[in-house]
Length: 231
Image (tube, rainbow, N blue to C red; front, side):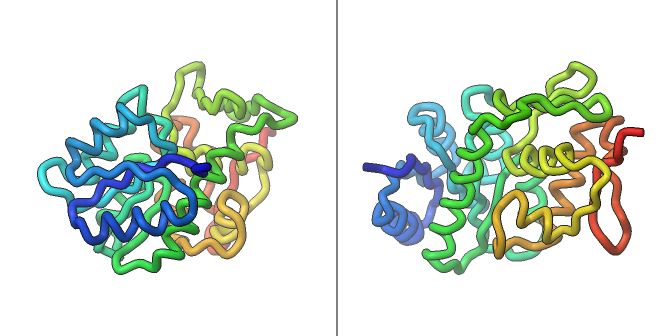
């Protein structure tokens, strides 16, 4: 029985088959696409649980594919894992700001790739489990943890799965200061191989999306972040 359906969008056939081989060996159903255009079509047609998306694609590049996936109602909630040959900021930050949930750089270990896939799918699955408190409200920000919705002053805000998890953690503990590593541990589990810079980018994205209420996510210099407590 398959553990989930993964759409892999990669123009290099050797890398595509390498990724597919290791995912299928772990029980995942794999849908293949070699162009951004075909990836978008397959995402709408097959409704995958996760998209692994190469950034450097011919035609529509991976960042544009990610943008389109997050703009369309039918594919907005599908988590995206970026696959990039660049290990430094520009593409990674751009992808995370567009709503991608994670990234892995080439060359990569197939074991690490499978672990990242499992982590993203597990986090999305856990987000769907009802909490004791299904609605959180702080500073005009309302989060419905069952519907996976965030609204600011009554207006719905589109956030990625990772942004949702971070905001949920901060809203559950208003006034508490968390280091970047504590945030990583809370939303992804301990020893997760992601940089502190990624947390900064996710926080920046949240502040922008929350508009005027974003100011309540405070930077505590030398420590980390907190959601300002309600007076």
